[in-house]
Amino acid sequence: MRAFKVFIACVVLLSGAGAWAQLFQAPDLVITAVRLDPAFPAPGSSVQIVATIANQGTRTTNDVFAVEFKADRFQIGIRFLADLAPGQSLEIPVVWEAKPGETVFRITVDPFKTISELDETNNSFYQIVNATVHEFTGADLVVRRLRVEPESPLAGEQTRLVATVANVGYGPALFVPVGFYVDGEQLAVQTLSERLPAGQEVTVALPWAAEVGEKVLRAKADPNGELFELDEANNAWTDYFEFAPPPNRCAQIVSLEFASTSLVLLEEMTSLPTSDLVALFIPAIRRQMERDYEGVNVRFYLRQPTGIFSTVFFSPENRSPILGLAPLDFGNLRKDDRGFVFVGSFHANRGLRLAPPELLAILFAKVASHELGHMLGLGHNPNGGIMNAQAEINPYLVQNAKFRPEDLEYLKRILPLDCR
Ligand SMILES: [Ca+2]
Ligand SMILES: [Ca+2]
Ligand SMILES: [Ca+2]
Ligand SMILES: [Zn+2]
Image 1: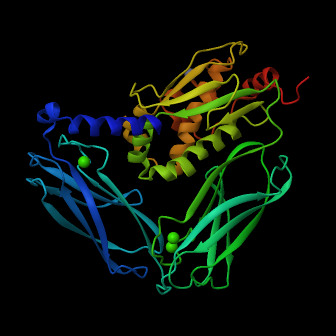
Image 2: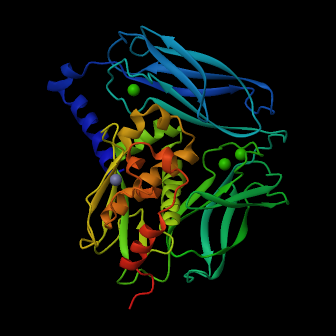
Image 3: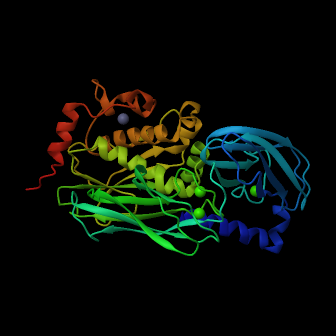
């Protein structure tokens, strides 16, 4: 994220510097507003979605460009426009049949990048829409915080995940549903059946056996879109927790690192907003890798770990058809290797780009587990499994694969959980 912010700052500086301004005369397409008619649709009803497209740049667009509407991952409309002058805006309507629950709309102007713009990073707009039979009451649920009770449990210990939910709207919430997630996986939805008046808060809890290591815990109010709210985008709270015991000296620490430019590619592939990539999609990759490495003394971190660690770097590079690359470190003599998963190669591959996000997370995890296998000393295994030589080109082949028993035995031998 840091690199991303720096990049934006540079663009602003350059376009603001008088002497250089001449070079930076260009259009800048943005979506300034999205409105729904009706604003609170019942499931199955026809909804008109109107996006306002504006050119806030300094030049007229000199080529045809598209405006694409997606409901979750699915395209529901595309319009082609031309000649939008600086300061000019247009309203683009699309009709959609409301499906029950929550839908995330992603509207992108110039998705095919035919227009060279002052700012290419402000072309997408997200809008969360609920469709439900319940009336709009003026409610607005938010999760204020999420804590674990007791505060520092040992892995395996019974705990409670406690979400504090507030109604910051002007009317009551008819009931209070809260979804709980660990590393992108939904544990349960707990629903308080009482009303929550405006201005009040309440706690909702779920029993959970603590899992070892770093976990991304998340609580989201109204996860299934059963309540209309003033703001549907402020419902989730996400935090990192680490549960004891800490890794022992036999452990291999592994950092899963994502370039900010890789997040942009992942956003295009999944249609998930960055916040959901960080809170759901990337933790789901980690969860699958933990399952692949079950019984092996490996600890995965999404935040940068301390001490000596190896890294799987999710790079924006496109090295098609190669999806990943890592050094072969037989015997795991180095504990600070660096391997790669090429997000750009995934993005360039139609069969991977169009995979549903849940499946895509698994496919990324399988390539990452394969690369980590090399970094721990595994070569390609002619018997297949995760170390199948084709995994780096076609992860569908290993979508359901585990490590072959001989590979797992090696991994458990060099990285024993029980450290003596
Ligand atoms: Ca733009
Ligand atoms: Ca809300
Ligand atoms: Ca809602
Ligand atoms: Zn390989």
